[in-house]
Amino acid sequence: MNLVERAKNIIINPKEEWGKVAEEEATMASVIISYVIPLALIPTVAAFIGYGFIGYNVPFFGKVTGISWGIQHAVTAFAGSLLGVTITAFVVDLLAPSFGSEKNIARSTQLVAYAFTPGFVGGILNVLPSLAMLGVLVGLYGIYLLYLGIPVLKKTPEDKTVVYLIVSILALIVAYAIIGVIVSSIMVAAFGLGTLGV
Image (cartoon, rainbow, N blue to C red; front, side, top):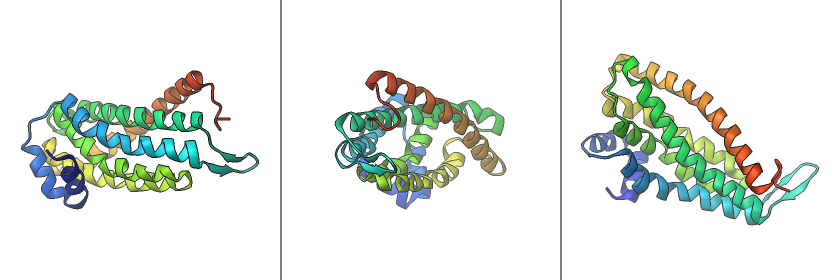
C-alpha cells in the first residue's frame, strides 16, 4: 500500500478504494504504524509551526504565540490523532454485533484510520491557527467515508448502516469529551500552561 495513493484515493474515489482495502490483510498495529502515524504528523507539525511561531489574536490578551504554546498544540494534535483512531476503532468494533456486523478489530482500525484521512490532511490548516477550524470542517467528510466503508469492511446489512453510524458517532462524542478533558489536564500539568499558554 502506497501511503500517498491510499490517502488520495480514499478521498477522491472512496467506493472503489474501500473494495481494495477489503482485500488487504492488516493488523491494528500495522495500520497505525504505516498510515496513521505518518499522516498524524501533518496536523502535528502544522500545529507546532502555527501556534509556536505564527500565533493568533485573542481579544483582551493580544497575540498568543510561543514555543511552549506550539509544543502543547503539537503534542495534543499527535496524541489526539492516535487516541482518536484507536478509541474510535474499539468503539466501532464493540458496537458491531449489535448491528449484524463483523467484529474484527483489524477491519475496524482500517475503516477508522482511512476515514480519518480528510481530518489528517485538513490538519495542515493548523499552520494558520485562525483557519484551524476549517481543517475540522474538512474532517467531517470522514463521516461520509465511514458510511461508505461500514458495509464493505464490517459486512453491515444495508438497512443497519445508518443506525450503526449514528450510534457510533454518539458514543464517540462522549468518548472524545472525556479524552479532551484528560489530554488538557495532562498538558497543563506537563507544561504548566493555562488555557492561553501564557
